[in-house]
Image 1 (cartoon, rainbow, N blue to C red):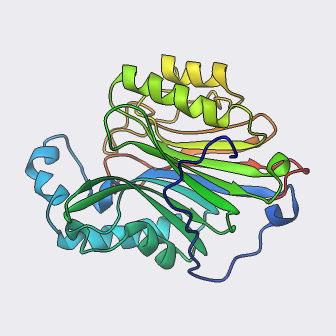
Image 2 (cartoon, helix red, strand yellow):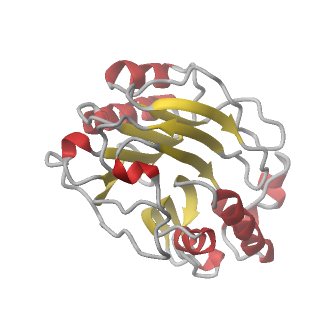
Image 3 (cartoon, one colour):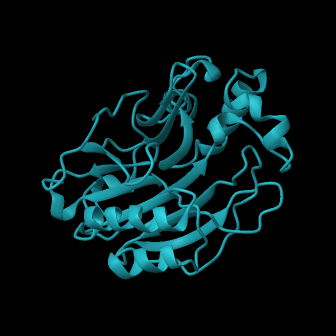
Length: 276
């Protein structure tokens, strides 16, 4: 990351003892997940965006129950990327939701990236939960209207044998997404081992995904798993892409309608030379 120095914070925070992983010695497997949690708000129909829209600004008694359900779902995973997390606003009872999910799910390390603040009401964030200790975490503001970001966690001391895990939430318009992915490409193009995950707001066969695959080394798993809307999934907006040396063993959407997106999960096998 020597060419980029725009990190806003580097804060892997201890929450619990690490669980032994084969990946710590090089090679081995990891269980990955990415989830747009909509700040703990469950949505079961389009009309609830209107009837339940107040929950984006005000506390709801159901939010904590949903967060506990999400924590239980994510507990079996090793690395989790989160989008639409609240970073401690009044609507979420001033709880940093990434930290809360880390503690409830037993993750040893977490990082919260605040991308947009609405006073003390809402702190729109990306998050990372990890059972491996990151060597560093860098935050980037993505081009376009303020409020979109990407975090990049590096696992491993030596850059040439490290694993880079990127969590992003892209814009709603195609033009903005292409600009953002051009920026992403500049960051990850020359990195040796990359996992890129998040709510990319575009389908797996979209021009945006084709552009990212053509301009970097990450690969599309070439299988569509529908994640949106959660109550009747029609399109794949959530993605996990990896560089070729990382073998994809399993990819699926999880039947867990606790947001307006379904979580996406992937099991991977790491190359033997990788040291995380």
